Image (cartoon, rainbow, N blue to C red; front, side, top):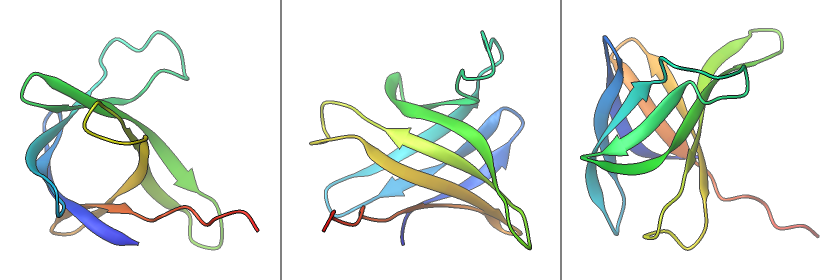
Length: 104
C-alpha cells in the first residue's frame, strides 16, 4: 500500500492533500448530512468545487477490529476509478492505495 494523502480530522470530516506524481490537490471529505439510506456514502470527496469521489465508514473484522473509511475516487482526470482507504492515527489520517492484483 502506498500513502497518497495526509489528512486532519475537522468538525465536518477531513481536510488534507492528495499528492501523486501527476497531481497535488487540497481535498476535503465532507460528511453527508442527508443520507437517503444506509447505502448512501458517509462522505463526499471534493477539491474546491469539484467532486472527486465518495466514501463509506467500514470496519474490518478480525482479532483486532479496524475502523477505516473506504474511498472511491473517480473523475475525468483518471483512467479508471481508484479504490483507496483512509486510516486514522494519533497525528491525523493517511489515505492509502494499492494496485489490484491481476487475475491469474
